[in-house]
Amino acid sequence: MSLTTNDAMIEIRPSAHAASPEERAKRMTNPGFGRIFTDHMVVVHYRDGQGWDRGVLRAYAPIELDPAASVLHYGQAIFEGFKAYKQPDGAIACFRPEANARRFNTSAARLAMPELPEATFLSAAKALITQDQAWVPGAVGESLYMRPLMIAMEPALGVRPSNEYLFILLASPSGAYFPAGVKPVTVWISDDYVRAAPGGTGFAKCAGNYAASLVAQRQAQGEGCDQVVWLDAIHRTYIEEMGGMNIFFVYQEKGETVVVTPELTGTLLPGITRDSLLQLAREQGFRAEERKITVDEWRSAIQEGRMTEAFACGTAAVITPVGHVKSRKGDWTIHNGETGPVAASLRETLLNLQHGLSKDSHGWMKKIV
Ligand code: PLP
Ligand code: COI
Image 1 (tube, helix red, strand yellow):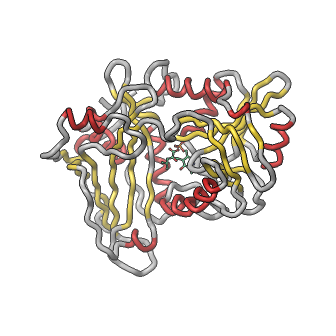
Image 2 (image 1 turned 120 degrees about the horizontal axis):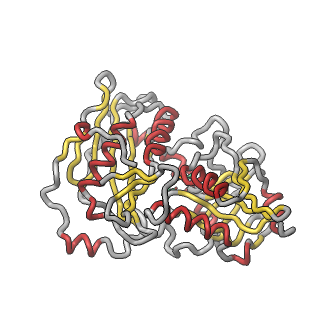
């Protein structure tokens, strides 16, 4: 399926100093995640009363920011993340980009920022991917990670919504998110910090959520763990997410495989990978449930052998198994610390779909070029 876009929305001003093919190939070797960027970016300005300007695709470069720009003081900043994949026929397609465009506006509304027309978001993606298509890696597990963001630009120190904003779209050729690849991670259940509280910004992808998570992530690392697991802010009992990813649990109940993920309460980020996996799990014959799950249930279900796997999911890392859990109340191991069959099968199903190696019966892949 192709994307509905409007080419006239973005003016194309190609860079005069794009990387040579040799330089590009060198930079794209072992790209890691989010470390290298393509030749171009798209910028779109907004002013109260005027609305959004026409977007411009231009050379990737630093932006100028007034030191009084309100994003630097009060943090009106949101972002998204989605990926473009090389297809077997040489085409390039994005995975569910309209869902990211919608969620971007949900985040904008929560931060009192203006909504960006979905057509602008998608037209920017089409313009940038088309211009920088040589930067889309081809191997399975590699992709062009697209990073849209919006920041408040008005130079003003009063605490109120800015009257000026900048939308930027940049692109980063990426491989594995975690340096170790798909090795199961060890997680620390955070008692000291919460990610999101009812009425807060947990469902929005705003920069401040990630800033506030860093000290908890550092504590987890101090405990010998790779990632932090977040609990709900009120009871400090229900599992919400793992780091910047949603989380799934796999149960075996009376011969049936059941995948469970915490329900969306307003404090969780409604992941597009999470939503996709719920659908794919059902199609693979598993029962899929969204409900609350406590830390005590996690531990006892593992001890009783009812739970056989746990894994986290998100755009950047796709699926990451959880091998070990550590907490102040005890530690436990899942599936001998190895990747389980349900995580492996769902990961392969999703990656095959994204790389165009299996039929896209959902219409999730949107051809760009
Ligand atoms: N949870 C958080 C806090 C995230 O930042 C992300 C990443 O976008 C996710 C979950 C996974 O969402 P998605 O699958 O849409 O990438
Ligand atoms: C995800 O894609 O799962 C993320 O959380 C992105 C991260 C780099 C913020």
